[in-house]
Image (cartoon, rainbow, N blue to C red; front, side, top):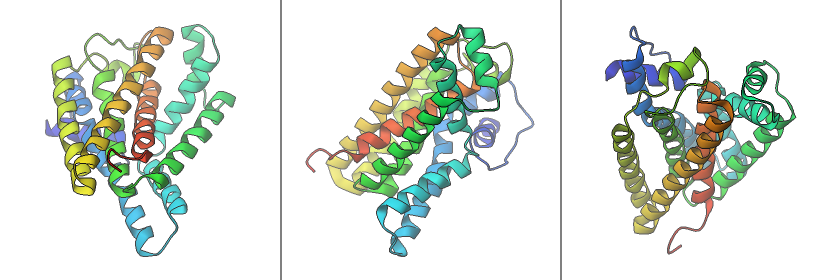
Amino acid sequence: MIAGLRLAVTLLTVVPLGTDRVDRGTARAAMLLAPAAGLITGGAAALVLLAGGLLGLPVLPAAALAVAATAAVTRALHLDGLADLADGLGSGRPAAEAMAIMKRSDIGPFGVVTLLLTLLIQVTALAAAPHPAVAVLIAAVAGRLALPWACRTGVPSARPGGLGALVAGTVPVRAAAASTAAVLAGAAAAGTAAGGLGGALHALAAVAAALVAALLLLRHAVRRLGGVTGDVLGALVEIAGTTALIVLAAVPPGG
């Protein structure tokens, strides 16, 4: 389990914990523990927001800096995956050609537009959230909850090699459900601390919506590409996290 946590942090953040064991068993543990890595990325963004508040920075530029911090802590790998997937799916080409487009180093028009809109939504939704520091933590963890479900048993890899092949199909559904229960409990606790019962319900709704959005995109990507790739996994993290922020920006129950 420790090796899995080290691998999760190494894959999903800039923190170079590393691990001597990189096999399917370690990959399974890493994907199950992926939501914990969200505490690092979300924590970095929350610190930026708190520092901005202490310095009297307006909420919108503080939110922009927080989103930038998240990108920096992840080396923007998830954003890159989102752009690549948008280009591949947007091309309308067969699976092999779409994946060849996704492997290119450049970004096409679909990727550019998707990145711009996603970042705009993230910044404005975070700025509108009642408790931005809590919201960004919940969204970061909820975003990475997509990974155990994307790597669950029965979901194939689209390629014979790469990250997708290492992690695809490694996570039993019951284990993914247990990871979800842990995330829901943590989100409810954070929501309660920030806004009482209404805050807890708000947080639970955000996690649920994030997971639904990720599963819908996953279904479409698997149907079009034949399975998951590293780019698909990165895109799922961004879509799920963005969806959570949108929900958290809405007026909470009783608000």
